[in-house]
Length: 228
Image 1 (cartoon, rainbow, N blue to C red):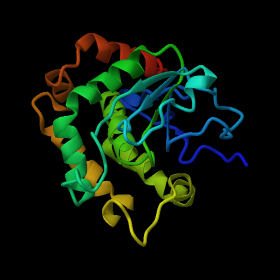
Image 2: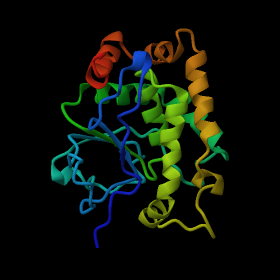
Image 3: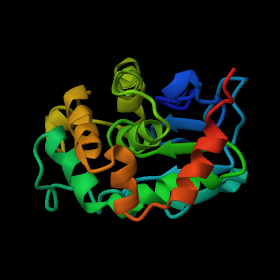
Image 4: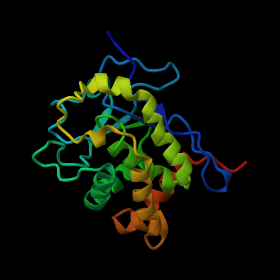
């Protein structure tokens, strides 16, 4: 029986620098979708581009939305989340690891979001950690403050049951640390503070990691509404 895409939401509508609002309908986030998932009537589906942040070991050979016409982009922010390769035991450590080792993939994510010709869906498995970091970078580059980014991240708490069902999670003999199942805003804040403390702030971090001023300009032109 089809169900709604777990943890699906539009991250637009928040206010960025100088009171400019982030356009809705352009950037979506979710847990891993299925081909027969239901979506709200006001969502354009399938999205034009799907950015899958899972590693190859986590996904099937074919993405479930690829057959519906979406262009699939795989940016594996972690090579795997299996016990024999996992060395981080806290979300803060995991998030730092992603920011430190996959900065070039985060830059690729921003480029894809900036250049897409329609809605973009960013997802991983739960739509919480890797997705949370990627979406946070986009929003911070748009000038959205940390408080609003954290508020969006916390919305995952309302989707916990649906995420558990989609992933078939077991809390009795988990394959990853139980701490990874939690929503921990301090972990995301720590990463954002690393970006903000870079010379030039988050924009400086993005450029040092391989981003370009042109892509940053395209991102802002696409997502920020004109001043009133």
